[in-house]
Length: 143
Ligand code: THU
Image (cartoon, rainbow, N blue to C red):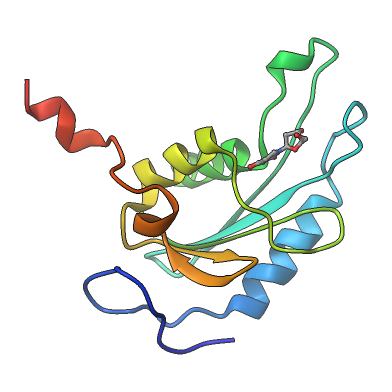
């Protein structure tokens, strides 16, 4: 699925191979470590360099320490040299589009910003619609 996207994103709309992102998210979900929830999650992000970065959830016997899939993806993004996320596809264990939790929406905002596109159960939406009135880096300069 490619092509123009509705929503509030400004600037050029990137061409996104959503099928490739979905395939990468499903593949990495199979490496999830989710023995406590039995709820594997995989996520794939397209960077502004054209690379795909991925992550899966990694749980812990100390339940509250579990890492969401998006945490792993953002770590990979930074570890490979940084860059911006332009599109993200998060899936559950059935390969269905999964809405990132609130904390992870904030992670995506930090590394993708308002125009980053997210595949949702209702179609492709910019983060500006997923996390309205977001707190972001610019607020730290307003002290
Ligand atoms: N999970 C994610 O990996 N990302 C999300 O955005 C939502 C939730 C994981 C955390 C936990 O390992 C499992 O899904 C069940 O909550």
